[in-house]
Image (cartoon, rainbow over all chains, first blue to last red):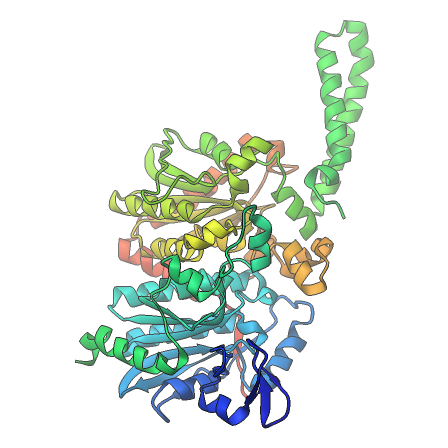
Length: 264
Length: 327
């Protein structure tokens, strides 16, 4: 999605030139090839939840640089300025057709959506809030994995967020995960993969190891659709592939059924 | 930058080999030869001791990586043989197939039945292939889940020994859900109502490690490493130069000492002088004592208390601030 001018842009999928207005109206999905372009957290929230229903929480949480890792402070500041957010995950409460939900939405633009201490804490609070308020949880994933710059602290976020999912299970709180492009590595191998329902956007990159690593480790031919939502669907690790324009309705319907015992 | 433990320890390994030869000669030596040989043996011993003191007295993060990966380092089955009795390996994942990178089964720890699960490395080419370099596939984690469930049902404490470079990254593992298997294994470890202790005995390699390292007490051996990404991989991303692994190892703070300072592990288990591979029996004894020490207070907690303690322990991990100014 490269801007040509304000009125036009290029599709990241088929490279065709698109009208910005048409592109926006089509929820940033290419009208020619159906490529789902990445969304900012704010845009995703606007497109998904009841208008004006979202109230952001925990936006003040900000990463430190506990390892004094090379260039981390600069990278983080750059990402903060770019996304106008302190971290890769935006969290809060919202409504879907009037039903309250606890939500977290990741933004790939913030350091590749990576999960460090803050993202881990915010995801955990999102799931804990769902338990406290007795509402379903919805998490939109978009991440390259754990944030290398926070070292082992980031790895531990995998365990921490998974613990919170376990708590949801125990308290009968439905948790829905949506894999958007890309959902990888440490995020995929923790809270993302143990949701009650897992949905993906078409063609989203979904995988454990970087494709390069997997292909290196592979002697035989790698399938063409390897690490796409479609491949993961065939593997049985995914419940549905849902185009963006149907996402709100799908989530809303699922939430009202799985959360029926909560909403009364 | 040495690339392997053998390269780094080379002068010491040579000294030890020569010393062994001399000591062999000494056994069959005549009294005259003995009086000539003995001083040389003593001299070699002194030099060896100096080497060990100097080399192991100031291990940097990269040297720790090399030692943690050393092919002479005791592996899970070596520890099991020394620490437990009656270990009975149970192999099936009851779903798809056998995995030889994660092993497990019931055993006795000072008579008490426990469930032991750990990654297993191989020492030669055939063994390494058989063990898939201790890189478990989904079947390995699903076998672990089965064993954790069994432990929970039969009230057996869980002990895991962690030693893997990573989970298997291949296409097969992807298509059978390696990510889900790791996540589900962590989930199960949070769910069980029995005490659990994990010990990182060598390489704690990212998701592959944490998949079986969610426990009431998490310990690391003195020269073990625990990292979110292999240092070479980190160097490739940061500087596009995998050979800068030493710099990445320092940046990642992957040593037991760093993990302890960050509050992410409960104890550093001392290793024998010159590291675990120099005295596997003593290393095992130290690991055993540490496991027993951490298991003891857990025995007094109820199942719910154990679960809550595990939740609170991992819940507290993370370092961040509440910003006072908006972005």
